[in-house]
Every structure is written in structure tokens, then in C-alpha cells.
Image (cartoon, rainbow, N blue to C red):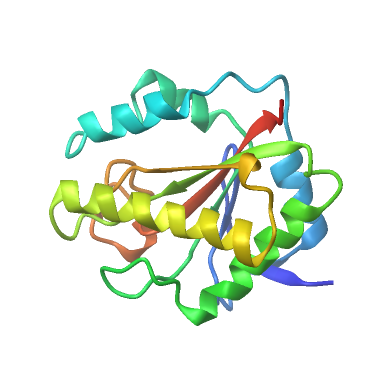
Length: 189
């Protein structure tokens, strides 16, 4: 059984950080259970509205916006994916994590769900640049999942929010803020 590292439990999901030696192991089974947890019918999420709100809020934050608040209620996973500096090139060491996510998305319990891949950045650099970079990184993850790992592309959606939804709001330039979230959007229709 493959394992990835778990560093913190979040209210609506799990946070995974590659290479953390002090963390407990998270099995494929736990990953599938976390991403498959849908307490009730997922609210309808309009990806175009999320993108529009993120673009309009560059430098202002998105966590308090109504459509983004709905996302925080859904089953999700926060994952550290390392990219080359100021690039969309996924670091080779992060492909293992992307592969474990793909394995989970291929599991029979998750095949019927669609997922939103949310790209984040730290606040290093210009807010508009970070927004564009985070969108490209979210697209890179969905592209890797759909091409390299054969996840059906109609199950994956991506949006970048730049620096607008920091994991560590007290330290907006922290590396922990550069991450990817997977959010279960409910059943494929």
C-alpha cells in the first residue's frame, strides 16, 4: 500500500505535505475516504464565477466571497506540489504526489466525482502575476492528471487564486501558501 505524508487535519479535508518526516502516514484508503466524503449534495459551483471573482479580487482576498465560502464546506485536500521557481514545470519529486492523487481518483469510490484543482501562490511578487501563475499551475496539475495519469478531463476543473487565500495569513510570503487544493465538487452529471 502506498503512503503519503499527513501534516495537519483541516475542518473540511486533509493537508498533505511531501517529505515531512514528523508526520503520520496517510494511506491510499484514507485519501479515498477523505476525498469521497460528501456529507450532502454538493452545492452547484460555477467555475466561471470563481475565476471571475478571483480575477476581480487580485490583491483583496477571496476567502470571504460567497462562492468561495461554499468551497470551504466541501471535502478537500491541500497538497504541496513543488514547481520550479516562477514556472509551471512540476518538480520531479512532486510527481509521486500527483501519482498518488491520480491513484485515488481512479479508485472506484471516487470515479463518479468531479474535482476542482485550485492553485495558490505566496505573496512574493505582483498580485496579478501570482494570479496568472497560480492558474497556470492548476492547469498543469489537471493536465498531468488527465494526460499522464489518464483521469478523464471532464472530471477536472482548475482555477487559480494567486495569493488571495493564504494557508498562513500571518506570513503571506511563506512557502506553505504555494499549494494546490483538490475539492470534491460532487457527482459527474
